[in-house]
Length: 82
Image (cartoon, rainbow, N blue to C red; front, top):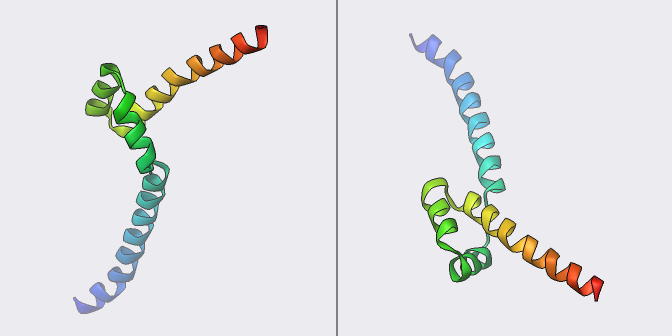
C-alpha cells in the first residue's frame, strides 16, 4: 500500500501544480487595477452595475469601456470634420 502511495503522490502533485498554473494564468488576465475600479464606480450607469452584480467586474468593465469608446470616437470625428 505504501508503494502505491509513493508512485501516485508525484503524479498527483504534478497534476495539482499544472492546474494551479492554469488558474494563475486565468487570474492574471482578469486582474484589474484600482484606478479602473475607482473610475468605474464613479461614472458607471445602472446597466453596468447590473452587469457587475451578475457577471463580475471584468464583464462590467468591458461594457463600461465599450460605452465610453464611441463617445471618444465621435468627439474625434467632430474635431476632424471642423
